[in-house]
Image 1: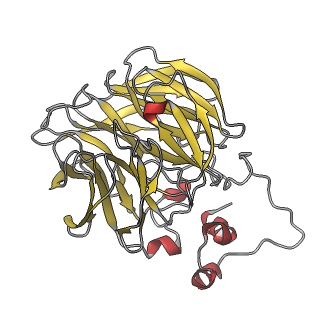
Image 2: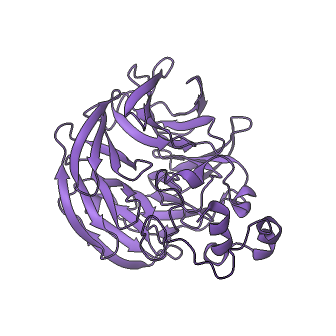
Image 3: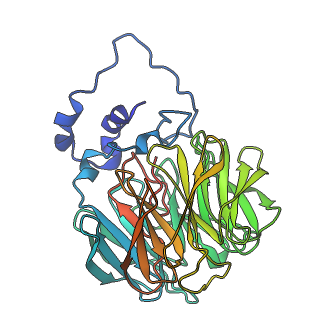
Amino acid sequence: MGFKQYLVAAVAILGVNASGMSAWAQDVAAPSEGVAPAAPLVQTIPGMPAVSNPDNLYSETGVGHIAPEVALDPARVYVPNLRSNDVYVIDPATNKVVDRFPVGKSPQHVVPSWDLRTLWVTNNAEGTIHGSLTPIDPRTGRPGPSVAVDDPYNMYFTPDGKSAIVVAEARKRLDFRDPHSMQLQQSVDVPECKGVNHADFSIDGRYAIFTCEFGGHLVKVDMVDKKVMGYLKLSSGGMPQDILVSPNGKIFYVADMMADGVFLVDGDTFREIGFIRTGLGAHGLYPSRDGTKMYVANRGSHLIHGHPHSKGGGVSVIDFATNKVVATWPIPGGGSPDMGNVSADGKALWLSGRFDDVVYRINTDDGSMISIPVGQEPHGLTVWPQPGRYSIGHTGILR
């Protein structure tokens, strides 16, 4: 099912105003009568949107694939600042901070919802029991009342859109919640996953792999039966961070900030199959808009609380086809690139400068960049709007 065909069928699911879609949808050809639709090449879990291109599961997140309703949202970069307990809002047209507002304690990430209509700030209130989620309306850019939620370090959404997964890092627990009200549905304990934090899903949505930052492990979780399938100890390193599945769904890339590179893991067999050295403190992973490359943010430190202006801070570019580093972009004067996302047109990589209290806007053609001052210890920023049909969470990993 192609991008346009899917959106027409999914109007009711996304809650999009059908009248606003009608003119746009008129050019979508209806299937011929009496002709059975072709069977999907990837058998996804019930309720999950079809995989349009099994060779590139990011095919619907390419330039120009922004849904009509999402396209009405103003272009903004939302930056959660961990230590100043606020969100800064940047206008990418001017590279200026145009708004800021307080949120809960220790905001970690800004997470687009599965239906693309809410941006959730995960305030995990480090060291306390007062965690919360702050919703942002992407149409107005303004926050709403926070929802009390225990230890929301990060958040994902099941590929069928039925649950939000609050990653309760300190509790070694995954809390499946209603994706709108955030009422608890059920919890899955991951006792051997110390520091559970980042995840990605198999191409068919049947399982997810989460990283365990403080134990050097990965944990594989069944998304249908909601149970742990097993643990994998990485061969070296010991501090896995972000994780990203390859365009064809066969390999999971795991950034490890102690190993200074990216491990390759076969998701189906759940075994380590390779390693790519990138740079000091490998941390965040983001696909390019055309699905051919992966940007690796090297934070420039092995420390959780590192120093500013690290000479090791920079970005490595990996070619998915060859698994080779094809470009390296150091931060001028040193820096600490952490989490972020790619602009809708694919021309800019936005990353928080974790220990430098700035945001980097990096030109994806040549690696040139500018820095924009923000609050104290910026972390998981998101860029909005994004092309794609639905979000699986984190800082805006769409499909």
